[in-house]
Length: 195
Image (tube, rainbow, N blue to C red; front, top):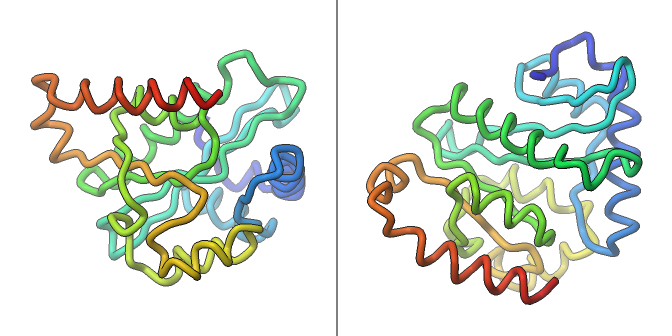
């Protein structure tokens, strides 16, 4: 469901789950504060998954470049609820939220997770260079808490360990004829081979 102010009580747990997930995978993830998470909830820019009153998943969106870009971020699922398809449902709901709130914006995601890459491909994202993403310095500041931030800085925000993926609503309309399927299959094949 879309999150609101009533879900603020889960903010600290969400931050802990994000941190623990990054530690387990040994990969970078931008650190967020409970206040940051609460701001997303209050602003109608977050999705929560609950099992009764128990928080089992979360994600949020953030607008960049004066509404030209929207990032989907912070996708997390409680370890006890993984491998049930919940991450895909949260990702789809977050994508839906971004499309509703910012229908003309390019929606992007950066990730090191092959599973997230596959979810993005199913939603119509395509791989892009990091240079194709927002130029907004505030977005890139969010990467400062990542253990790979030095890689990003050394490469002038063009190359990192994350993969950039983007959904462009204008291009998606033009690709409904199937032009993007070849790109998706090729990229998905590479992702599956890495796993």
